[in-house]
Length: 122
Picture 1 (spheres, rainbow, N blue to C red):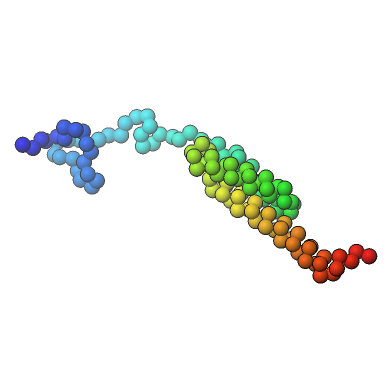
Picture 2: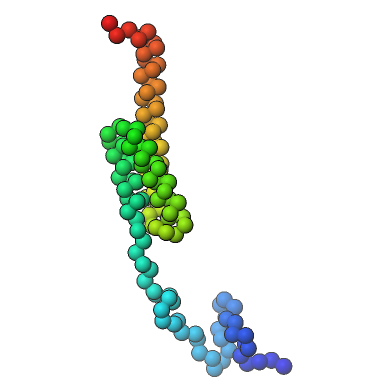
């Protein structure tokens, strides 16, 4: 015996139309298709990106470290869904690590030049 309607209320498989005489399901109100999403807080990601960029401009290692820490916190919050700006946080992390690498390279260059010249400051 076949039923004209599915007694369990399951949806039809993708791409198939409902049987003749049954209307297409209409989207409901509320949290349906077009419900606006609440704006997500991106403040920490923006601040991390600004601090990381400022560290490149000012060539300071402390700002780079602060930008990396803030970027990691913002990125983890964005991955958990607590905040937005996952891309900005990732950019802040990359730029912050780049700033740290530049500072380490400059310090290493100063040490190499100092050793090559026998640290002669006279």
